Amino acid sequence: MRKTWFLPLTLALLFSCGEAASSSDAFSSDQGSTALSSESDALSSESTAASTDATYDFYCVNDFHGSIVEQMNGRYYEAGIAKYFGKLKELKAKDPDHTFILSAGDMFQGSLESNDNYGHLVIDAMNDVGFDAMTLGNHEFDYGQQRLLDNIELMEFPVLGGNIRRYENGPTLTPWSDSIGTSAIIERGGNKIGIVGMIGYGQTSSITSRIVQDIYFESPARLATAEAKRLRQEEDCDIVVYVIHDDMASCQTYAADKQYFDGVFCGHKHTKNNRLIGNVPFIQSYCNGEAISHFQLTIKDGKTTCTSYGLIDSQSSWTEDERIAEIRDSYIKDPDFTAKAGAIAGTIEGTLDAKEGVPNLISKAIYEKYKALYPELRCGMQNGLRAPLNGEVTYRDIYKAAPFTNNVTIASVLGSEILSEGEANSIYCGENNRFSPDEHYLIACVDYILYHQNDKKEYNYFPSLNDNPDAIVADHEDYPFDLAFAYIHDNENGDVNASDYLNSCPGFSAVQA
Image 1 (cartoon, rainbow, N blue to C red):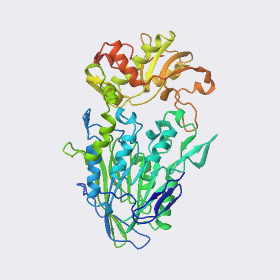
Image 2: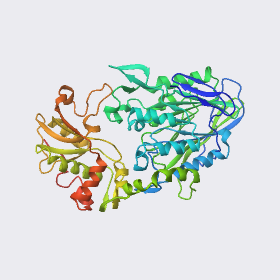
Image 3: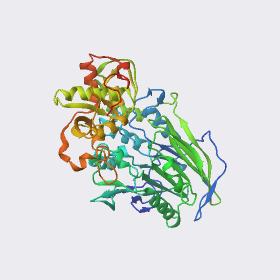
Image 4: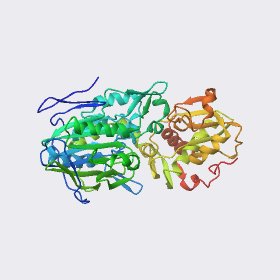
C-alpha cells in the first residue's frame, strides 16, 4: 500500500516511483538551522517559477549503523544517539520552516542495541527528530525484505530509492515496492523543495545474496537526472537536492550540474566528501554519528545560491536530548538486554584490529568448531569487520566489531578459488596452507563470501558453485559474533593475546599453491 501523511496545514504528501504531489510541511515539529564554518562563493541556479526569497539549511546523516551508545571506536568519537540526534533536533528547532533533516541510508544495522530490535529504536528516534526523508542503503536489507517493509511502515517520513527494481529471470523496470519513492516534494517557507533518492548501482553485491535474489539496483544516473528535471519543469520545484547512498565519485559526472541538483548528500563509503563540483556541493560525513553533513542554499530573485557547505564534527559537549534518551533507555535498559550485552567473554591483551585481528580470530573460531564435525575441513574464512577489540570485551563489544548475521556454510570448492579469496579475506588453515588450484577442498566460510553474486546473479567469488550446487554441504545457523564470544570465553579461557592473530602467525599465513 502507498502511504499517505495527513498534514497539519493542508492535504498530504504522497510519493511514489516517478511521481510526487506537493504539499505544505508535513513533518516540521520543533527543529531549526545553523551556519557552518566552511563557506563557498555564491553559486546560483535559476528557478523555473516564481519563488520566495529564503535561506534553507539541509543536514544529512549517512551510515549511522545503529551507533546508539556514545563511545570511542578506535580513534573516532561516536556521539551516541541521544547527543547526535539531539543536535539534529536542536538545529531544526531554531527555524523549522527553513530546515531539512535527511538520511543517506544505512541507519540501523551495526550494533547489538539496534539489531536486537531490528532498528526500531533508531526509527522511533528519527520520528521524534522529524526527519524529512531517507534514502535506503544496502544494509537496510540485512534484516530481510519483509522486515524492511515492516520498518518502512513505522517511518513517519518519505523513504526513497527510485532505482530499486524487481529481478525476474533478469532485470525488469518494475519497482520493488510502492512503499518506496523516487522523490518527495515538501513545500516550506514559501517554496517547493524536491528531494530525489537513489541507492548506488549494483550494491546488491554488498548484501548477502540470498536476501536479494529478486532485486537489483539500476544505474541511477538517468533516473535521477530525469526526476530532477521533472521536479523543476512539471512540479515547479525551486530547490532540488539529491540524496544517494553512494560516494561522490560514483555520481559527480551527472549530478554536478545545477540544471538538475542544487546539492548532493552521499554515503556508503564511510569517508569524507566535502567538495564543490560544477557549483554543486557534495557532502559525506564519515559514519557512525561521527559528523553531520550540511549545506545552506539561498533563493534570491529566483536564483538558488550555495552560501556554505561542510561537515559538523560531533562533540562530547553536545547535550543529550531527554526524549531521545528515554527512547534509547526503553530498549537498552531492559534487564534481559543488559545481561546479554554485558556478558564478559574475556580480556584481549593488545588490540585486535577490525581488518586483521578480529576476522583472523573468527576465521580460527570457525575452523576449530567445524573441524570437529568435518575432519576433511581445510580452512575457515571470514571477511573484514567493523571495530577493534581490546581490554575486557563483552558480548556487546564483539557484536559491534562483527555485527553481521552471516551463517557459516560448508562447501567443496576449487583450490584456485581458495587461493584467490584467501588473498582478499581472513583465512585460517591450521598446519597446511597449500592448495592445488585444480583440486576441490572442504571449507567453512561465512555465507556472504561463499554465496557472493554479481549483477547477473552468478556466483563470482566461488564460480564453481554455478555448475555444481551440490557442492554446498551444509548451512549452519552460527553467527560470527556468537562464535567469537564462545571462542574467547571457552577455547582461550578468556585470555587472548592479540599478537597471536596477525597475518604472520602460524595458520594465518598467506595461502600458497
